Length: 331
Image: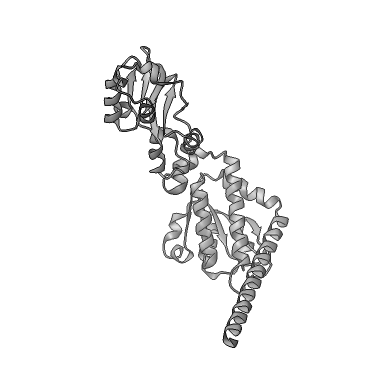
């Protein structure tokens, strides 16, 4: 019994220590971000002016944890309309300096501003007149003095219990990179369509797809003239395997549709003798080919339907089934 109580007490103590450590870390990093927010001044606009108007690419560099953050910032720039890449300082000293042109802008990151690995890149920028944006906490450091523009990080120590592992500094750098990314997106008028072009895969890609990317067209589309007989309807629905048939008039105008559910509900020995125009759903819900796939899914969910025709100038140009959306990750 005593051992059980002792075990519970030790677990309780451990949980409290972990929770307090988490709170201290979060509060410290929040304080750092607040200090970064309060320090924003005209140098941010100067930096964005340079980045927006560069004729070349945006080159990120840094060593250690700063290098990891630099890679993320470069990836964010590149995916949102600002061509960018990362150059490792060590590789730069062994030939990769040639990747940097005079039209580029270099963003060099070092919390202390004294990373010796950056010296060759800083000298290269000075020699060839490459614009340099320095991100550091120390304006009087080697990196601070070398920069054409200095974006200062808050000097708020680190959040780790030792006060040594990069925590506050990397969080502030990451947020500053996001600020620059968001600023360039706003200035350039970067659109969702452009974002989609750069993110064709994964969940982002599926969310940003349009109906035109997924719909069935041409011979895959189950379409008949509205005065077709029921035998033709059953053959068309069976062969196209989408669980529906759309109908058009003599001018090709979309007039209605029948689903396999409709047929089941009116199933009788006389069904083959019935007229399509009397059974079909007239003026059903339709969408345009530019509708976002996610919006099409919402419409199907709200209307409790599994198929929807895509209409352009009152004529059917495609049809989409709920499985087309689900199979492409749209939910």
